[in-house]
Image (tube, rainbow, N blue to C red):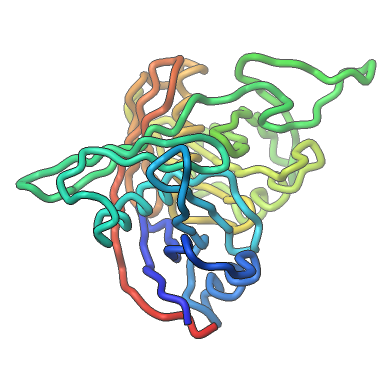
Length: 287
């Protein structure tokens, strides 16, 4: 028997488990528990763990059992979980969480004594091909080395795409379109881009449209999950790409099907992600 809490951040939903004293086949559990027809139903399974470098450790297994490096919405949900379970002091102002990618600091914003919002420090964006990672070679066969935003042009299903490649600890490919994102055939294009040969670890794919210099709309195809209603690290990747391309400023609201995520990036340094984190229900998984 395994206790869990179902949580969501802008409708990006998770099964959260305190796994500090547990051993399981976590990929197998993610496959079973995240199934929306035969299991609990979620985009990912998130484990709260002990850490020697932060207040808590975190591992993320997507619905297909694949372990992801980080998750912006999941980090906020784990912070709320720790707060509500009494694992940290109720008046604490911040908590640190170690993922595979980095150590994230989550700060709590309170109104009338209640935590209403969570802001996660998501680390610095990464642009080098070996760390995104992406396998691109020149005509001579040598690896192309880049230190700035890379616009990679491809054609998928007769649609021309310009993929802006960036890592937020996990790989992202961002395409900006002129049409409303609701009209973009994400269910057709997303799985193809995710598994393109140039992405050795697959990639998350975001399609975004600029509304003005403070607002963008977007949809996300998440690696190992499919289309999700929101993606925190994806929102950060969109904010970084839009800033570097001159489409938006340092503070941007990303409108996703599940809600709005707030991002801030000055053009260097770390990206900050703000948004809600909500506990939906608790239960016991009968394993």
